[in-house]
Length: 235
Image (cartoon, rainbow, N blue to C red; front, side, top):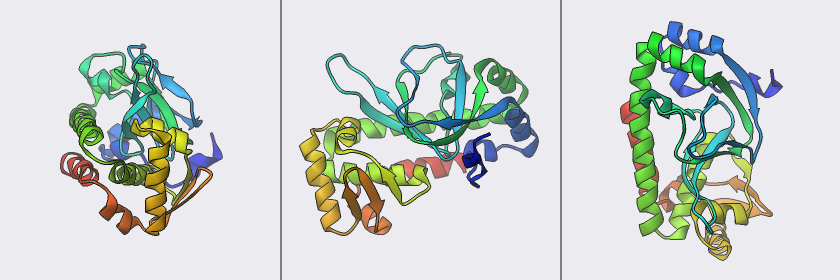
């Protein structure tokens, strides 16, 4: 077991289950390290394992020929990778790549299917979680089309901050540009504006969140919408 697993962070989906069901699932899981940049699955690839992040987080990106991947969603310790198994679909529609190094619980897909049959509360919670994921995807699509880069960057930093469990993380301009689907110069300008306002400190890919409340004010409405969806359906 990785020493980092000892960090007192739980997966909120598993923690929301009755103790008996949560224990059953955890007995089928193994602790793994999520290594930055690792591709966990590709579109339409058969899922062999499902992941419940703890301190790491996973980016869901869509890919088009001759274009850089575009991020559509983030999965941290509030969720899981592989919830489509609930629908009887053994694959995911997007690439899943580790964006934040950390830890996760991993479970074999066959074991998870068995637990879905044995644990009715798990099925109920994951049905609601799938709705939250659908809402996140649609919100991200609208946000990408209608909102300016600076509030979108603020939203994205807030989402990352929520899942990183730290005020400091590493992300290059190039990586941010790819995730937001914009030019690198656009990210440079937007990050510079947030830094001038004292909301973040950003140098050579090192990002520190200095003013969380200010960053929330700078974000577009999409961040609050995502938080509200999760709070209403999964708490």
